[in-house]
Length: 102
Image 1 (cartoon, rainbow, N blue to C red):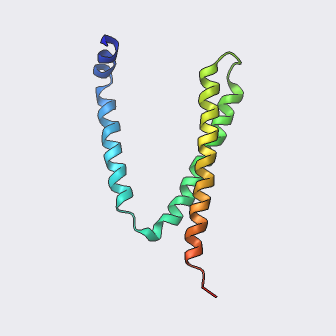
Image 2: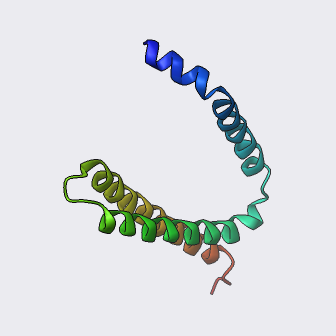
Image 3: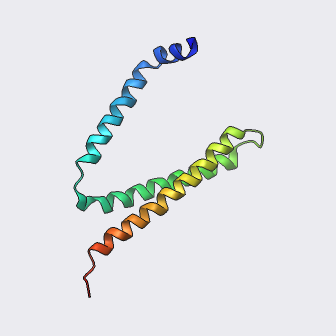
């Protein structure tokens, strides 16, 4: 418990910044009009593509006995891939709404 409290006191400013980033992100995302969700989803897909490439590089450069790096890299690849695929599915659905009905 003492180590945890020491960590909090040493990183107090960083913790405040993270909390403010969370509130700012919620406010910014909540105010985005629905028309802009498709372009923003495309940007998010590009960012997660970079995350996937970075995770693959981390896994490739890590030692065989560094299980933490391998596990985190694997989880990053899996979750990033799920996010990219889900983003493309949502983008495709939203673009279907703008097609003319026959």
